[in-house]
Structures are given as structure tokens and as C-alpha cells.
Amino acid sequence: MKKKATRKEQREGRLWDDIRALYDKLLYWFYERESPGEAQPFAVKLERLLKKVSPHHETILGEECWSLIHELKGNYRQAIKYRENEIRLIERLQELARGKPNGQVILRRYDYSDLCDRLELLAMLYHRAGNLDKAVSVLQECERLCDRHKFAFDAADVLEAYLDEIAENNAKGEAAPKRKTHRPARHTKRRRAKSLR
Image 1 (cartoon, one colour):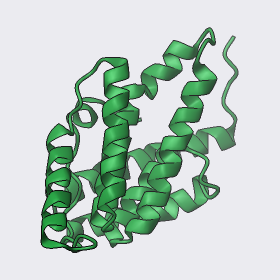
Image 2 (cartoon, one colour):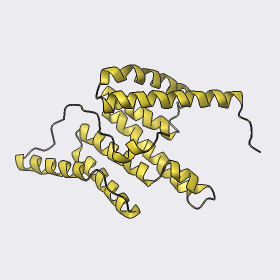
Image 3 (cartoon, helix red, strand yellow):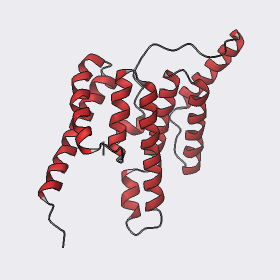
Image 4 (cartoon, one colour):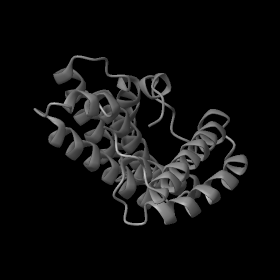
């Protein structure tokens, strides 16, 4: 028999529904429409809710939201920090789910393709932050994960572009790449195809 949710749990559930709705709007305006100004009000509301529901940075969706909020602000260092924590939480969840009776249900929500999507987004954040070597390293890790689990590596073109950029910089004798102007990271095909958690 399923236990009835308490009033507090119901209220928290509604807040998470609001967070998902705001996150969808933020993604739409920032990524799809490439309009940071239109995305900003949703980020402000989202940040306010996250401070109530996920102040200790212990939820996967919360960290995904925090990363996007800081990416919108142009604070790539913080965006990277939250994206890396989101990846760590997904890996931990996968580790806990392995071999458990209900493990497949959990892994359907955050499977290896989800992990690859997050690695691609992390690489793009490193690129924007001016750390091209780390961006390449993260994408190569993503490629190995795709190979291991036998699905397509969607960021092959991005990895190739980053490697070309390194070669160009080396040919020019530059120690580090110049910082690029801000453009939101592209959505991955898998991310578009999957519903948000």
C-alpha cells in the first residue's frame, strides 16, 4: 500500500513542478531562441525557488538548473562547478542502482546517454571559460563512454573543432586560446529527444 504524501511533501512536489516549468522556459529562451534577455526573468524566479528546495546542492535537477543560471550570467567557473557536481551525482546514482531490484527504473531516468549529454555541456563550458585542453579531455572521456555503451558520439564535430583550434593556436605560437564571445551551448540530440526530469 502506497503511503500518502504529507502536506510538506506535496508542497515540495509542487515547487519541483514549478522548477521544471521555469527550467523549460529558461532553456527555450536561452538555448533555442538565443535570447539571454528574455531568459533572465525565468532564471531569477528559478534561483529563488532553488534556494528554498535545494540549498545544499544535493539534487541532480537542482545542480543542472544552477549550472544553467550561472552560464546565463556568464559566470562559467560557477557553471562548471555545478555541472561537475550534477555529473558526480548522476554517477553516484548509477553506482547505487547497479544490481538493485529496481535499478533499471532508476537508470532509465538517468542513463549513460544522459551522462554523455552532461559531459558534452561541461566541455562547452570549459571551452567558453578558455580552458581548451580540459574541454578536449572531457569530450574524449565522453567519446570513450559512448563507445563503451555502444551509442553514437554526438559531439564528434565539436571535438574536431576544438582539436583544430588547438592546432591553430599552436601554429600561431599562442599559449592559450582567446576567449570566445558568449553563445549558449547547443542542445545535444539526445537531450532534445528526452523529456526533462
